[in-house]
Image (tube, rainbow, N blue to C red; front, side, top):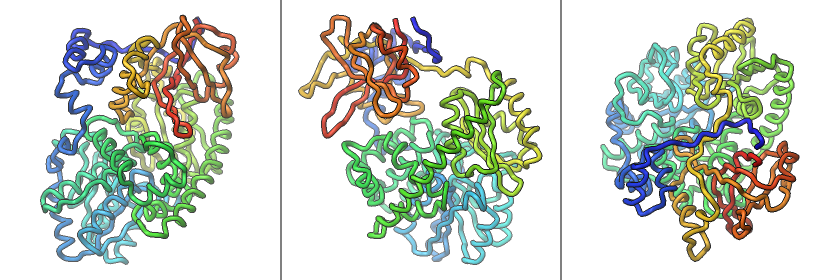
Length: 573
């Protein structure tokens, strides 16, 4: 049997629980095992999982600081104060700004919004923005997806009698900024039951709480759409409220999309139902591109407006995205060229160039991990300060590594798998050695081999049982009801043993392989595609029987729908 660089791990769950749940729900044990592995082991929990509803949201007032935040906004509305909505320049921050602006427009008029320039100001609440607030006579700032580490900016605001509400989801530092209210489930003493909301998700909780306290009876479909885009783009775990947000957001997007998103999908000639993949791969890069190459305000203005001027704004957004793709491709090639000259036995990737655009280093870090599966940092230079992004492999907490090295930084912040950092250029060599040493100390070497978790074994014979009028198998119909999929609720992965490679795979696009498989009896057939797998063509072109690991997907082409396997890995038997 041919080897693979991936480690295949078949999930183990309690067999009796699987059997009982299958009986309760009248489904196969194949599906029951998938649910039990996700912590769904009773009829009630399954009902809540398959039928998400807005009454499943937690009470926003359980979040520390919520009462103070809601009351302060009410006061600002009653006194006609100038309110500034401040957001980060990424998708989460931009959607957060659009969400709160659209909300405030329903209750007041004196609203401004501000997002820092990535190159000139960097991440967080900048001191430059405090001066801007003074000049505009701002009374209240609502900061979203940033602020939890901006102690200096918060002090400056307080000195200038500007009140601050922080809505952030990043880990707080040892010193917490001074603010009227801090909404962050990760802060000490916060009893909110769900800790994994993105910044826009916390903004949504703020709106829900205000709506509830003052009986506004708002229609939340607009807000769900923006929070869904942010949650998908920020790769938060799709469990609990995050799954609910994305589910309700996608439903609203398919029923009655807001004008900016409707126009974007029309421009892309999107066919069929909008799904989470569309949010991640179509909407998010376009919103992000503005903040990466120009100013995030372009994307925020686009998402806020429903006017005729949208088309012109969309052209700018598309132009930024096209430019981002070109820059991203050039830098990725240069970074890989650097890495090929580094020691083979390293456990980290760290690359740097003064010529690289700061706005795309995070994307490049993610691409490098696809090629070299190691914790990765990509840095660019500006005024003797190196700024960049860190990305981690699954299961390894890169934030804790950087936290141990924070004495070398000008600033840093982030999550378990992604972080941003700045350091003086003179500290680069010291940091590179310390980063490699710290990761080597903390990492389990098994973490450096990508893992594929397999939910269950499936045969074509079992798959094609119980077809409906459209020839769609029951298993696939129920799996569709488990959407949206993402981190924490991954698309079920199956192992198909002894599939017959019906003919040599076709090369499609630049680097994809397309297959048609059958069972040994050659009476059941299924198409399959393996993206970015051209390197495997020679090993597979003459192979007959294979073990195939993949997920079930629906290929929509010119209105025709056909089930297929999205291949994750193959072993030749």
